[in-house]
Length: 229
Image (cartoon, rainbow, N blue to C red; front, side, top):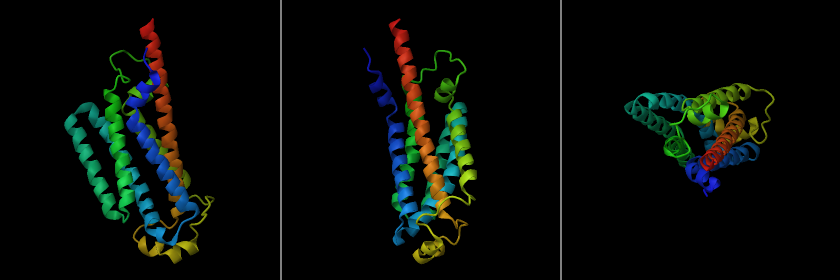
């Protein structure tokens, strides 16, 4: 008798690790938003850059998914572009810790796509009916498109918003900490909006990953019942 939970855990391990890293980022964003220290101004500035980079990385992820369906060469070209964007992000930021965490998150996104595609859970040999579950699990373009739409919605809802609380990131704190001097080259005068965007966005990614794992578990249980019959 197969242990369905262990099978799903084994083949979704990169996704689970990615969820853990997203949780770490959320806690970091909340700490910087609610109780920032004066020596955090560089990290806060780097996070605003990271949220802009995430927009570009989502576009690259979407095109990688399309390229993977047509040509392996195009797929590797897109992965090379991923690496160039990460190097650009590293050049634009001062925090190597944040760069390392974000780079690992991007790596695990690639591993998740590759690992689950090769796992027994993604059995594309049998026909799939058109349903929400099968689109999420088996359409390689659907998830990047959903993630991009999610980011675009949250970006438009938070950046430019006038009611999001500043908490510890008041104008007085930003002036005294040197944030404006460090970040004068970018139009990011309201870092609390980008931290709010990060909290909402990465929380939504965790919920989306949890949904995928639940759907994979349900599909594996259904496959197990089919084999018994």
